[in-house]
Length: 429
Image 1 (spheres, rainbow, N blue to C red):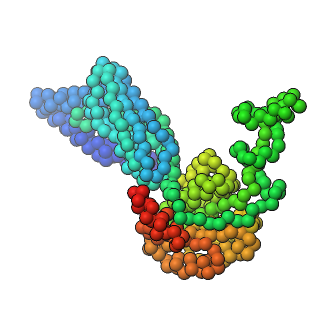
Image 2: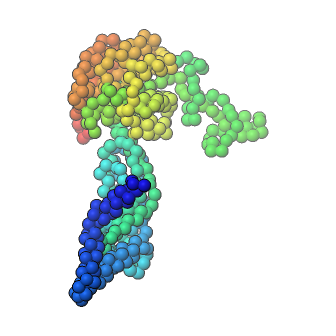
Image 3: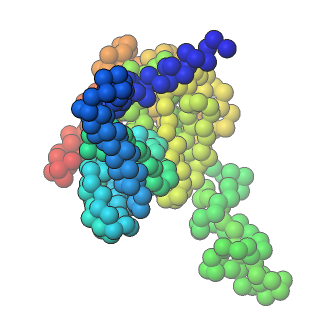
């Protein structure tokens, strides 16, 4: 019973002195002049009070009138982009009444960095106005755009009113993927026929069998001899080629990260992982992805553009909130990798546990490699150079990326690094 009055007083303060001081001053002046008028019975305070009361009523009517008959539409060109692309959108506001609208503040509610789709507009009777907004998507992630807020106030800013139009729309920004012309890891041993094959929904040279036709199946997959024999439509099923798989393991352990924003080990590591995934998919290799962020995320090896999109979606929202060290991750999931697997670890950790796990996997026949993001160059602990030398001494391919490095050149093998750098400079990269 005691807290309620204080809460009401705090709420009243926020909407008066806290936010609308002009309105508070006018109301206090009105109360003072009317009190003075009734006490003195003098005509001047009455006239001033009437003017103030009329101003308040006119402000309320102005604000209410300017919120009527509005329509706002937002149109996004694309909702899936890559870091470095520009998000193009068009915002259009229309007045459906015969009364003009003045000083409408249109703001776009968004958590996308750099998004600035707001402006102040005035509309004539039954008119509309639109403008294009281009926002550079500098950082990967999942962002929310909308709704569009229209704020209306009277000329003296005594009253204001906000209306929201439209619904929220999500935009996903994929991490950058860079060409890696100088990066090449020899494939692992080819698997034997039969037991290592795996079914896939993509068309490959290896037909595995037939099944009944289902809605959505392509007509070029129909197996006509089986259709004639069974009397119903039958389609061919396929399996992956008997080639080695590539696994990219991304370390998202929060304790191994350094730097902040775009200049951090996290962003460099994600860019490296995304580039590796695209690099091997373009070579028609089956690629899988494993990382631990807020939980374990695994994308089984497959091929195709849709598979690349799935992994980029995972990398777009991956954040260094994991609490599982890379060495533990490799040991726990090492049973699914054998001599038919090429494993590439991407990490900024300088602990020896993950390097020991890679050596253990190599003894089992796994083709192991690593890309280290040098935490020392981002203000973190030293040791990346020594880790790289130790891995190379153990016949494990290793590259190291430092802050400010151009990743394709840093990941190129020593024998091709100069030629790769010259080729990229010639292309204007």
